Length: 535
Image 1: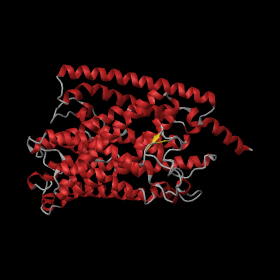
Image 2: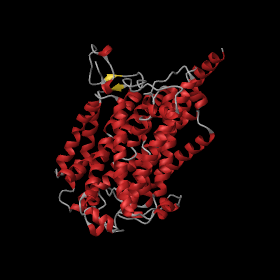
Image 3: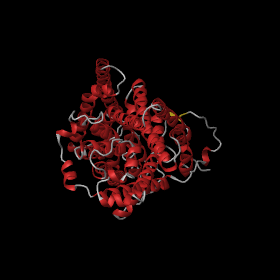
């Protein structure tokens, strides 16, 4: 009998299943260690066998939330935020490397490893925070998919939002075809998205020298002025960081890095898995960087500067049909056929749907890891999506009496604010990950090298500082309270965040000491393997 992802579950066919069950086994047990890999073969053949998890992770770095932040950043500030995309992509590569390594070496995903070293109360808080981060991501996917359905098939927006709930059927179909095929499908969709934006940017003949200059670090990328359309370079940078370095991707990668068959009694097998998983991750995230850079360049070069007043997906779709807004004769000639706008909408739909499986898998990982509960994937997806459509429907309903541009801008702002929230949640996944992978007790010879430790701490401190520094202006931008009330709420939130981070640090430190005393870390296992090898 086949279970989820085409895995044989014959031994479980007589067991009665419940909607919510207790779970405290291996991470994503149905697919853990199910993909066979070669040993002692050529580099490319081995890399191909390990390729796949990186694609599932990279999907999260090019979802509709990235589109909104990158294109808007290009429209508003030209190539200034290119450096933000580069730095956030490098940070992402570093963090995903650590997350995958943690899963491979410890045989636990990030949620399991964190919960094993902390108390129940903190585990529940971190679970709720990560669930909210997943829902914030899902809001962007709902908006992107609903708009794509509206643009391609002229389905009214509210029905389109409800149709996005049905992507649970896509999930049910995918679980029947096998995990390796899912990896292949996702990789193909990434190439489709890459092709669409490469084609559109190539036609626009952007100023490549200015784009490359934009990659250089500059204080302009974190300035609080100018304010264009309610967005400053700093808030735009935080939106890009939140959409690029995503907390739930760290949990996902630490789980799916364990899908390859590993002999945990053989150091060489573990070393090979860490090495090729890192190659896979960096290649796929490099493609994600190219896509995000193309999105920002598209915002700058495809359209005339200042021509697009409506920077929502609707406005961009219309602008790709409006020859007066485009930047050069070649684009104008192609736009007359309607192919530019159609490709844009197709890529938008593919981008939103591409994240269906990864978002659901991540939700299952954190639920099992933090609170030891398990739900069927379809039920998990249905609950998350229903909750996520509520703010989208509320936004559409509240702006129904306003102008079209105001409606579109409201949806765009909802999506961008959801991405900023991800940046606030990120330190609470980064800090435990860094502490564990820095520890020799936890990782043995696989602990982070000195330069990785330095870059890791630099990333945690930088992102946390930027998030807290921009929090007052973020709350003011919601236009819900007065400036004074917004600032008071922001400062209270800052104190709560710092207290929670300190609490997390203390419990992780104590957990590391406890593991050392009890001989539970990988260091002890490594010593045994080395002694056995000598004998």
